Length: 297
Image (spheres, rainbow, N blue to C red):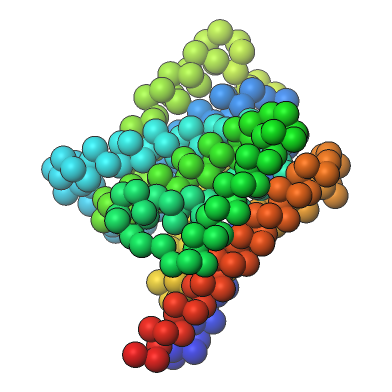
């Protein structure tokens, strides 16, 4: 495969991943008659099933070495708890009509990553990155004071996903085997909830329509497939390109929230979003400047 073709396929895979993540609110909305906790339980359980099938198909089911590595196992256990709670809050946000607030969280995530880099990896900020971080923090404070409510959904989604990414980086385990361990950690709780629902008559699997059954089971596919695409794409294009493409998902989410599901967008949120976009523009510019300097060396 030529370098040019390899790069083109990298962009395609990465775009597919972010497009799918951006469109996920439509999927969860189809299940909004079901409690968020039950949807989460199915997402966890079926994700484990599909990721194990995937690893068997790819002949990569080599989890024993991860279980033997206490540090990696502990890191992935914590990562599993973080991503599970992130999924739960995200599904809840979609189903209670807070897609716009959720999108703000994923816009903030790159800036949260910068803050985590300073705290845990002893990374240094340049002036532009510091300005971007302060601007983002100011927008959250403004939204809290003027809107009268702390944007906990946005902050939790950003913080949990940022910490999740940090732990994944620290674990050194590939994306799909890592997801297998993470969902394995959560599956006893998820499966217990599913079984309780079936026994008590409160569950929705195999009690309603074929569409509901299919959507609950395929939650595993819509979780694992974009992650696989992202893994393929990120290896073939620059980290800078991935950084810019990550804004595709929250932009689609924002547009869905505003124009498809007609969520409110008061002035306070408009100002906060404008400040975040300005912060991201400054942050992106700092990445470009840094990248060009490295290329010149």
